[in-house]
Length: 45
Image: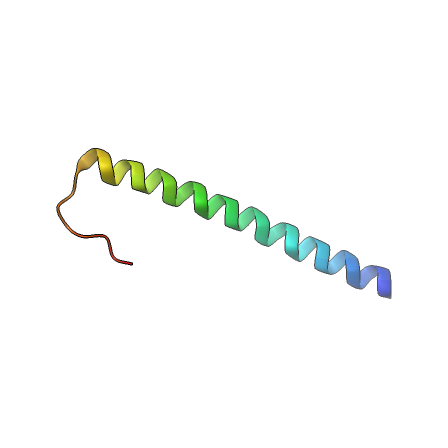
C-alpha cells in the first residue's frame, strides 16, 4: 500500500514536470515569434 502511494506521487510529479517543460518551451517559442513579427500590441500578462 505504501509503495503504491509513492509510485502514484512519482508518476504525478513526473507528469507535471513534463507539462512544465513543454509549457516553458512553448512560451519561449511564442516569444521568439512575437519578437520576429514585432507586433505593436502589448503582451497580456
